[in-house]
Image (cartoon, rainbow, N blue to C red; front, side, top):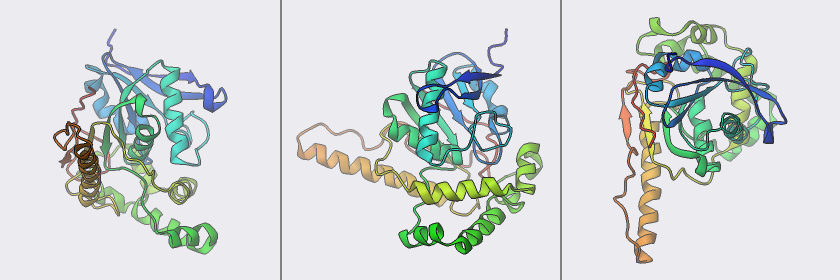
Length: 289
């Protein structure tokens, strides 16, 4: 039996999910690695180019996130990123994975961030690919869009064009011809429900007050041109984590404790992994320990 081949399985969820089911790709051997896909398609479209290579050294858990594609088979969309984070942990419970390295791409990176913050004992390390915490919208803008249907329609139109439209094929991919059919279809015919779902979560979720404490690797396309998703966003995220780490060390020094190096293993920006950014990972080495 080829253990590097993943199979799609239906798993029963309990606890927070009221005995619902989820579709999860499983395979591989070694330390557990959870892969969370983005909003342009399902798990197969995002991760298949790399999952056999990763499965040689890791036990992979690759769920179809609920509500992202109509045929996900994992139930309805969640209303908050925190709910997705809880859902991922329930999937880990269902497949008997106590702790894993969590890897998220784009939307999946935001979900991974919440898993790391809300359930730190379940996340050994964190890999954020072209994503991180949800955008920090000014309070006045959040209030305006929550209370004005016109403002929401304008925001949805802009989101449809810039992130879920055909322009994203050139702004987010080094080689648009290599884009999987499922992703190409999503960007050619954006689903209004998906766009509204993404906007609604950005408005409701806010940004977690805590930061992940796990070793964190930030991976960004060096030429990514998607709105609010260029390499500067990755550098800002890296600097924010390092600033918090340095502040914590200053407190430890005042308390007479031994401070570390100021940079956790893996906490660095890796540019140009995919050439241009959002899309399918072609090569990535993840260290799960």
